[in-house]
Image (cartoon, rainbow over all chains, first blue to last red; front, side):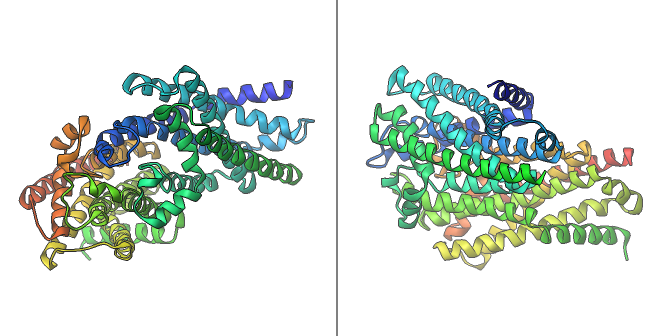
Length: 254
Length: 256
């Protein structure tokens, strides 16, 4: 526990001390939310659109978009530790791999929490509230953190496999592709192009968005929440196992 | 050879060579416009059923009008990043010592941005044609459309060069990118101007890119609109940024 706490403290302080990492991950999603909700408000006139406010519909996007930035941050931090030799020095200590992974990812969870609370506040101030009520807001933050963890683990995995920050940056556009090819802009049943709807159906990001969206505009939707948590949790678990395996290899190499 | 042309050719060739041989530079330049095109043309195509959406050439063409402009503008913005990188690495300082006509350096960056934009636009156009782009305009309309796009490219690279030459660090990136990003996205990106609501509608009404975008979409639909105002506004932007880039060059010369 003490090992985890030490590394977690370092990870949190390091993440939050980098305004270049924190500010864009909050500012850009909010900017896009603001532009999208105004630019696409007429989409709510489409028959079958689930709400009459595009802001409410789009509020889910910054939570997932912020998590994508977390992946970048987690990967970059991990890559810096590899490139600076910090990980090599750690490998000489009796530190456990699990402690290292958990400690490293705590900073990302802290960033994810700040993002989620900021986006939630913006949603409450400028929107029509959270349909699922205060309890729903808590679940929304929890789901948002699991999504941040999922993408953070992927970022850490890429960094540990490649050992450099450039590879992490190179993967970043793929995360954005995953967001863009989802039900980000319209509900899946309103997507006209068959191929796009099929991609969105298979894209786990759609279910993460819909889990958050259900809390904002529907209320308590057990199926949407279960799918959202299952997709985010499943990806987090798989990426965590993969990152741990990569860390084992990395520690042997060093 | 004329010292101006000699410097311009050398800078342009070097930048284009670096760009085409470095996938880390080429891929993002292509991926981002393609993401936007795919996501909007594919995911938002139902939006053309909204009452009041009266663009006859279809939603794919409507989105292409924006993505074309975006690709051209970001071709210039990414070249601005290259200028900043050249200053940070010290190459630009050596370049300024070697060039007898330093205006040629700026012209060289402009030419390289033009080359990058033309390549990106070609790829995006091919993808768009495969995806169902309908061009209703005639040959003159098409010339007008791509001339507008390349003027936007010139505006972006001159603006980026001016910023990069003043700040001379890669940290100038957000200062180069953010204004261009805001100009592009505070225009009628997903729906026609009359269907915009809220503060974006107000911003679009004073945004010069709105004119350029509407004119470009008019060319694509074979129904040219606001042609003179669009060309006037984009020419003015280029003229102002020529002065801006010239000021940047003077600033860089002082420390070279």
